[in-house]
Image (cartoon, helix red, strand yellow):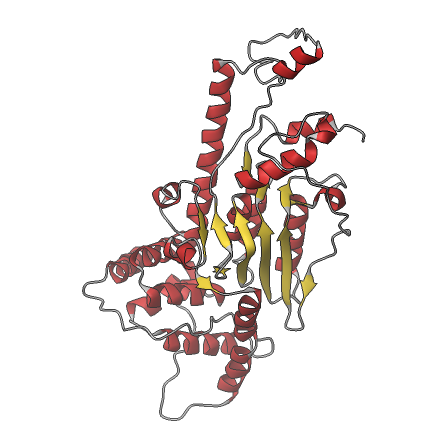
Length: 409
C-alpha cells in the first residue's frame, strides 16, 4: 500500500472540530497508509468503496434535502469516494444554489456526521445561517450531528433529534504525533535545521516542547471561542450556555432540555413539517385573499414605516430573549414572522398580545395581499396551544415596547 504522508497534515497538529471517538477510527484507517503502527486505542478499518456523491434531492413540494454525511473537510481532493468525506465547499455551493433557486421553497439539512476539519467550517456555517433568511431551513440529526456538524446544524431555524440521535460535542481537539521513540527503535536520527524560533515547534521527530504546547493550546482556545460564538449566535443563546455543555454529547430529549435542539422527530417528521408549512397554508392564503370576510375585520394591511425599517439584529435579540424565558408563544411568533419573510411585523404583533393562530392568519393574508399570483407562505405549522402572555409582567413585551419607541425616534 502506497504511504500518503501528505494526509498527516490534515490530522495532526491542527485544530479539529470532531468527536474524539471518530478521530480514533480515522487514525486506525490512516495509520497503515502513513507508515505507522495502528494506535492501541484505534481500530484498523477498511474504507468502503462509496459511490460519487450526487446533487441534493428535491421533493415534489420543492424541498431541497442537502446531505451532510461523513467526515467534514475543507476540500476533498477527489478522495471522498475512498474515505467517506464531505467537503464544506460542496455544502456551501449546494446551499447557495438551493437558497437562490426559485423552484426551491424550503431546505432540510440531513445530517449524520461526527464533524471534521476546522478549515472551512465557519464559512460553511455562515452560508447556512444566511440561507435561513431566504428559505425555511430545518435540520435533522439523522443519527449524529457532532462538533463541526452541529455547528452547521445550528444555523437552521429548527433542529430535530430522534430518540436515539445525538448532537453536541461543541469543542476542539488537537493531536500531536511524536515518532521519536519509533525513530530510535528503527535506528533513525533526524537533524532539523531551521530559521525562526518556532519554525520546528510541531515537527514529529522530537518530543513536544513546552513552548510548542503553548502555541497549540492558544490555537485551540482561539478556535473554541469562534465555535462557541457561532453556535451561540445561531441558537440565540448566551455563550456561557454553550461553554457549560463542556463538549458533552446529548441524545433525544436531553438535547432539547439543553436547548441544542427544538423538536423530537425523525427525517420524515422534519419533512412532514416542511410540507405542512409549504402546502396547506398556501391554499388557505389564496382562499382568504379571494373570499371577502363578513363582519370580521382583516388584520392584513400595509406595514408601517417603522415595521419596514426595524433592524434584524433587534429581532434576533427578541428571539434570544424569548428562548431564554422559555416563552413558547412569543418564540413561535418571532419564528413565524421570520419564516414568512416579514420579520418587521414581529414587534407589533407581540405588543398586541396576538396568539400564534392570529399571527398565522395575519401573515397568510398579508402575503396573499402582497402577491396574489405567487404565494410563498412560510408560516409555521401550529405546535400547540399556549396561554396568552401578560404584557404587564413579561420582560419580552417590555423589550418590544422599547424597540417600538426606538423605531419611532
